Length: 393
Image (cartoon, rainbow, N blue to C red; front, side, top):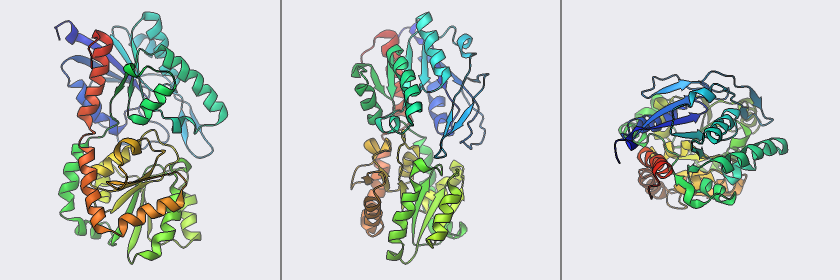
């Protein structure tokens, strides 16, 4: 690559600085070929609880406003509106926009088309998540989607389900680049391996000294399907002498879930609230398996985190991560959403077979090692090089 090419300036527009994206942004900013600047529409959103960090990359939080719509199931939609993006994009060679379901993304595409600057759409959308909205919302999003899909020069997909979504909507597969939805795998691997040496002591310190522990991490909202996990737990509780269910996260469904536990006399269900990544690792390490019973998830990065901590995974095919990361009977099981029987059987198969659990533990870590930040960065760079210079993959 010559000196002129190495000066390419890349603008990345994304809703908020989510902690699980920070490692990716930092790694991108450290690449020698391009200069990245990250534009955040807002510092946070109503359904997110994250601690502020000092970011070691070039970024700016855009001025604007972000009205919030709360759906009946407790999920939240934030419409970021940042007109200032129209003069912030001057001087960039490529615009990369994360998603299309907020006005700032559409403004960015308008700028791209008017000034003939290529725009890449970075998306996590899947056929399952697209179908999970109401008719009105689906119609509005569909209009935005078609505008973005037709106007974008190329596409960065986070996994197989997203690639399938794009191809179904008429995108040429040659214009799709895979950048795995990844977390800082090394952080979770390194710290979990250290903590495993004191697992029993850690259980006592956390006052969770039970033989078997199931863990869920995420928002406490209807879309996550937690009620189905409680129903499955209810069926298997009597099969084990000492078992518990850890529910980590916050959300509008919390009181409803607690009432369900009380009404059905469910024992050893612990609602632990939000936990930072450093603390979360402790709960993952003491657990025997991770369950994400979601009805629709564009990925499910908690699966990545749990796998890096060496946990077998039980999830639904409606979690996009299931296609790429969960290999049936190797490191976990994939069931249909709302399939209580399937969920129950999958959990029991792991908990009742310590040898299988250990094999899955090893397999989870092996699989996730090849699905990390380095692979995600390389996906971005391939998309950029192809768009700017026509470089082959």
